[in-house]
Image 1 (cartoon, rainbow, N blue to C red):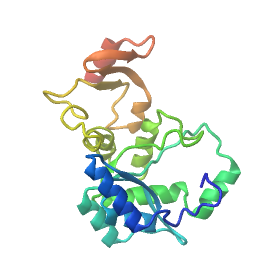
Image 2 (image 1 turned 30 degrees about the vertical axis):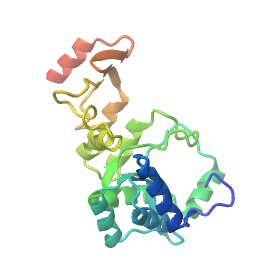
Image 3 (image 1 turned 120 degrees about the vertical axis):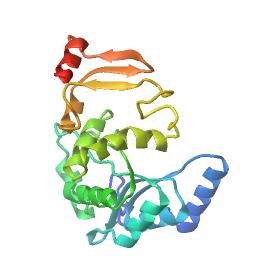
Length: 232
């Protein structure tokens, strides 16, 4: 939508082109991810054997559409799908952009609908925000992404897993990141509140640990009092 003259309901590459790209990436030992809003593009990416799909909106000229056959195929393929929800509520999106998005069928309700259907269908879902694509999508938006996943009907645990263990697996870091277990890096995000009860607690970080070392702490916060509050 950000490039004049493009049609988000159609694929830009042929199946043959995608298969060639996948084959070359895999020959070099690299994963490959497709950017796909159109239903046609999602089907072609699936058939080509990509490792990931960004958006996976399944747009058609009549709006969002995904059938059981495609859901089953996506789930069985184990392709990692990133629904890229979440936006900064403090940023006013220009009306002309909203109008273009609405004409293309990309509305908040449609994106939440497809994210809900994909997760319910057993598709391997990973968390990501499309950060940097526009003013309403700044980097560092991941907590709002998870919040919108939950508003889409996801269990809180599924949203948290998409941002931790699944994300680590997809990035090829399953043996080091994304889990709290022996042998893994001691990476922790401490927040004020319990995100399993209220996902918005992720918006109140207190301290961040990377490899066991504190790399950021909210000014004026007493970590001991935060931990004591959780224990109570």
